[in-house]
Image 1 (cartoon, helix red, strand yellow):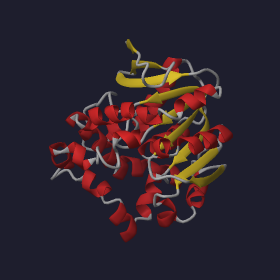
Image 2: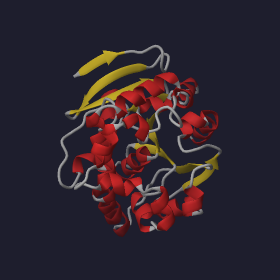
Image 3: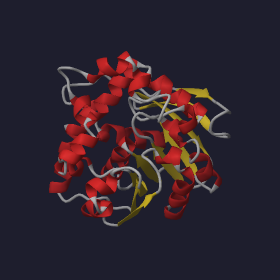
Image 4: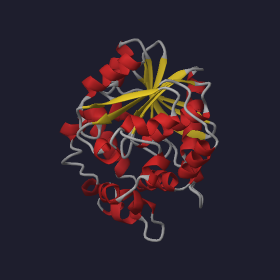
Length: 298
């Protein structure tokens, strides 16, 4: 099933659709022509976070595909289970592959930021015959982050543990005042995000079903995703395609992990990386340098 739509005020000359991907509804925006690249957003964003990046890549000769991750934005929100399996990065990677099948792309590059980077590297690990290049932004593999967790990480990223609680679920706290929780009028203001991107962000965080699904993503990250990483590492599975690790220099990646590329090296046959001057949401805060990095690597 395909429901067509188009919004000329965002991503000019891009098409917006709601696609049925193996029974899962995925909202996607795509445009351009040439080699395909998938851009995967992080929390609590939607695909519109790429509004300043995607058109530049399309103009440079790429087919650019920007979905809402499962559970996020206007994509489907499956019922979860005790193991949070429907929100595992393995399930989300299957969404990416199914989406690209539906759009007619056998091979594609994939770039992910924040939570989207977990989906991106899982796609490369599970589907090496499909992913030509991988870009991960502001992340290390989930199991590496958890094994390196100390007081500094826990203080900065305490929300990982808060989101994971089931006895006193975070949904009740966040949904009581989502705009304050997500700093919708300060650090995540219309000026910082861009007006159309901000409107899409607001619609997402105001939807209790989306908030629940986004937290399920984190719960999966501490359980099934960690387990899958541990299995891959024990079996010696590595990302076979060329990989680029990028990070925001004004975030805390270097402070927590030191040499970020060194953390990725055991997971990849070929990896390089560097920091870009930006705070965390790099696609919104420094799209110019991010586009330059992506074009150079792709």
